[in-house]
Length: 139
Image (cartoon, rainbow, N blue to C red; front, side, top):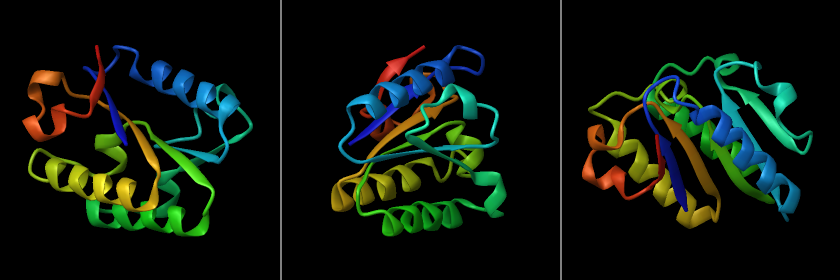
């Protein structure tokens, strides 16, 4: 399953994402991972959540980002959910490859039974129709 929290920068997407991650961590039967562009939110997240600073892994394009996601999943068979903050930035997404990356994440989610919750700095109406179906919160 994929859920997207969409809205312009500064609308409060990260706060909602952190609240969702912490809520899920309290009831989780598996592991939770939170990917971000820095360690800034480390102390806002439950200690049950593994924070990964994507910038520490020298990712340079969206294909390498998908490789990182696959590596995280392959190392943790109890992984329940991955929260992705600042998705466009950490995954090197542009208007041309957004649908491609979302399709790959959907396949990974279905195959590996891992949920993705994504904060995306775009308004709902700026997203392709194939991506709009994943939006659960629009700010």
